[in-house]
Image (cartoon, rainbow, N blue to C red; front, side, top):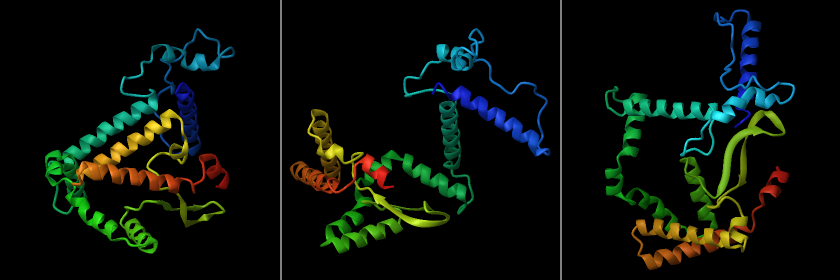
Length: 249
């Protein structure tokens, strides 16, 4: 985060140079293109260029309590969220023409914010998918269900997307990668230290709660949750570690 001022300064220089080189671009009448309030002119740039550029900002900046860091890009991100929220709330007022993108976006946002309706329907929207899962008899049917889900944007278990071919960037190809774990990576399922054991216990509690919310009794929910952890733990043993995965790529 402390390097933001330097990055922004470089970006400002690049932008100014690009505008001059373009010839047709209009440059305003300003003579200064740098934000100097965060600089510490008491520091000689030859002694410590970072403190020269960022010293005052580092001394005075306060990280908000709800943030893990703070700086220009954080501010831009937060402002963008506020702007998006305003756009969505305006679209949700229902003043847009029926069938328009504004109407569709507004309705989608409103449906997601209607917690009363969400609580009322409960797990009902999930029932069709849960029924399909219960109907799976073997791995072939499982793979067919996964493929069907990917076609609807709901795929899981496998990492799949379309992107540039790393061996030929002129073409896009279907790319498969390992996925399917609830926890970040395989070590979370295999380590025996107290922290890892506690995390797995937390996963069981979470999964049990999810099953309970679908109408399963608490005893059965805990049994199913434990079975899920056992299954995923077995699955995790066949995956590469983060280091192995990077090397393989």
